[in-house]
Length: 267
Image (cartoon, rainbow, N blue to C red; front, side, top):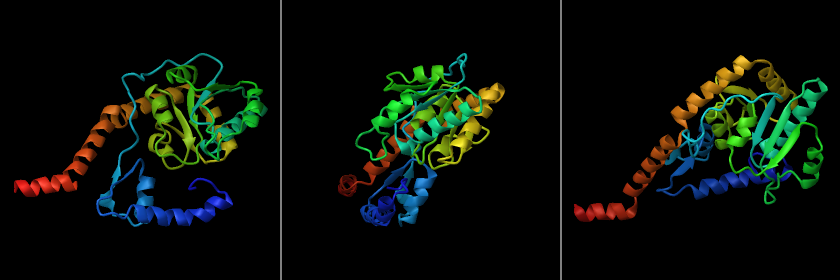
């Protein structure tokens, strides 16, 4: 509803905002968000800042996901996520087609499956057509995500909006440079010229330019990938995020009616 530009979504958006404002109006309500943009949205709905908790994602296991050496040729970009238009997967396919017309051959791995319950899912007819594309591989569901990043030089997520994309965090943990859209969630981990490159959403040409730039600059890829790994370890590890979640539960428990009743009895 908040990412689609359809007429139905635009009409329903004001009602959704009012509903959220009503649901979150309780005196003991705490709203958990994953990025500063969503926190700002909650404040626009009328929530007090002290009722909003920002915990960035669910964390990644940086001991299991460790830096991987770059694969050999051909140059390959990897996408991990549900096969939805909102995830920008069509934009990536179109970017690859643009590169092919330029004479730049780039292989593309799409790891993930459609989501039939989501109106933005890519239909099977389109997937069948994509399977005929040269240098485009639909991997389906992948049990071990390291298999994707072991084959990829760069991680790409051209999404229209995210909470905090775990696929990019996992790629960063494996030492991969990142390309994503300049939208909420993605820009939390993709820091321009530090961990990766940001492009405008729904812009295949801009995405193609970013892919071509990293393809031709190995030193830049390695620098971005190393920095991405360092930032994930420092800010997005499972241990770091888990400590923040435990702290939130402790605060909620201490402020619960049962805890307050017990404190009154003790007093």
